[in-house]
Image (cartoon, rainbow, N blue to C red; front, side, top):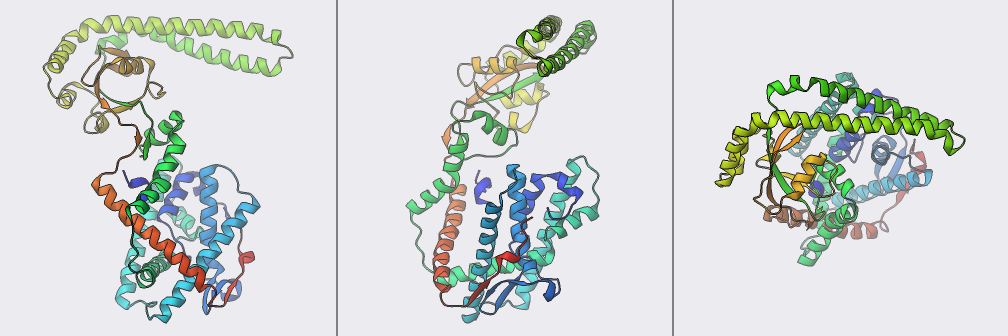
Length: 453
């Protein structure tokens, strides 16, 4: 559960079509520092702290990846003012990194042994391969034709190289050293841990999903994500799903044909009504199109009813023996998971060990037949009469109520939270020190040299 928070285009490239997921993957696994490779005259100094310098080729990837990510996720272009804020924040991060290096150098802790460097380089190579493979999988899933060379070029264009990852790992290690050296003995209280948890995890999810069930189902349930806040009213439903008998499909061919024709006719009437609405000068001009749509809608409803009723009437006597057998096992109190494994075509992990599907009275993820039967069950342990849908014949089982509200941490999650909160508060303390160090050294910045395209 702590997965979420505690773990929680300058050049045209066709790989951009992979979209925000690819950018997010790079951002989560990506780098803070680029690596200087261009000639010095073509790669000006953007940040200098004492005699520690960071060139444009080192700072630019940080800024550009953040702009790309935010624009991809938000679906809107940032204003010049917003880009200026991101630019200044990127420069400030490098100023902090430079100050850390200066202070560590004075303490004799800035350099790395050959063994330490090799360990970091190996980690950088492994992380580069992880990012590359992740992008490759995203590219394959996109349905577009991408080559391995395009993946590599995309990463290079974005500044994600083994060398860049190596520099980022050195920067992270230096920050750890600075915390250990300059922030020893920082006491983390229970109140601080709780405040960190609420501010960074609970409150964002509570605010986002507390009054928006559709958004919760779209972003959390549909994508298999996790949230630290669950809207009230969910119940876990398991199902035994049976296929329709083989002969049924042939027996309802006529009704299925009528239903398909009615569906196509209704789609055509919708398009005609839309076109008429665009061309209409007054409401009365839509009379004919509206009448045609209403007629098609009525035929669609009639065709659907005829199809469903005949399918059910023909199926009931054929599946009755199997359903009686299933009901007998359930009434005897046999384990629901064993019954599912024995009879159901739906052996999805969530339908078994996952505890069941989350169903809410206001859910839009389920067919009306399924939702109505699921909500009609009165208490955990109840099971439904057969429910007939296009997916098959369902027997629904009310497995449990899903606790709503704030997520209660497990022991393992709490241990992870304490570690994360400790690192956060140590970082806050370090930033206070950095603010004072800025008065001790000569600092030069040139944010105007960075591109914001």
